[in-house]
Image 1: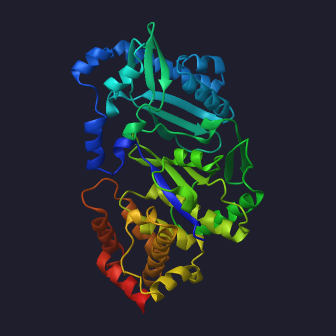
Image 2 (image 1 turned 30 degrees about the vertical axis):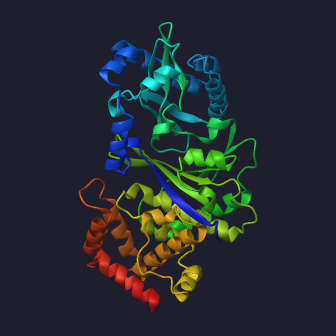
Image 3 (image 1 turned 90 degrees about the horizontal axis):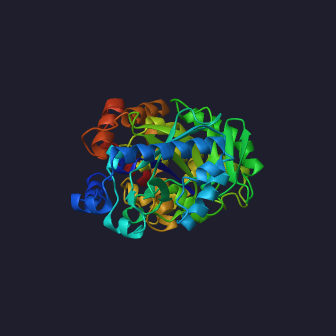
Length: 435
């Protein structure tokens, strides 16, 4: 079980990550638009240039939908050979995805033009360069109820009066990573099974039949614990290997300790609403697993998927993962055996785990944090009932962008729901564990 953890990730636009002031400072120092002197050296980006880039992006999006390889590749800078090869792989994969819609738009006023003198040096033979953020929006047929919104950081180069795409990773050193999808790495296959669609590389074994057999049961289990809205369909993906998985997730932590991830996306133009529920399994997640364990994992991830539209940055991870783990194990108290051993060893500190403790430390440390989160949710439900926990979660998740730190909002939501604050909740839980 040490590698049995799962996680939920929220894919937010870069400037919207609530890393807050630190992220803003990094961007201002390292990723700001070029100074007037630099811009003059690289060439002014005119309204006509922006219109030409918009037309280029429209052509790329249209050729993606129409599966027109020649037009798609005509938008790629032929001198960027490795990038052109990756773009061909991307097209081969994307051409097998049944997109209902697909658009690309440069959003100039979100971060500005992020080109730097070093980028100009990289493309000295180009007449001009530009690196705005490009918003990618798509829906997969019979799958997505709203647009999935992701960010691409494309480098546009101007050659002989024509704009082309030369790269999508020139800003990686600043932490601005272009979105990656399973289909970016080559041909994929999709299969429908009840409420679920699976998307896997054609090069590798697909999703085991037993997973699809228990997925519906996992959906029903999660539905018993969550009273809010539920998605009609869920996309399940399995990348070819761990390298692809980590890049798709844009994970900055060791993913080897996790078997599955719930991934959601934020639409910044629609009140920071979540869209595109995805569950991503690690390539080796199913080896030797029993159907019972797969059911637990599916119910855990589906609880994340169901609660995501009702969540916010003020819901701490111990509640997110605790609720999912409590649900995944169907409220079975026998699932907390590891925590009981921690208490017996005298290593229990009586405090709810911090967010970072769910992704840092060794496998045992991370697993302990999951057990403590599970136990905290169990204590809440035993004291005040599952219906009140749902009410509390909805109250807390409804606090989207407001003054105050997470602890303040958890305290306020608990007071509103059950008349008890954060400190009393933590003390009561710790006392119940130690008794």
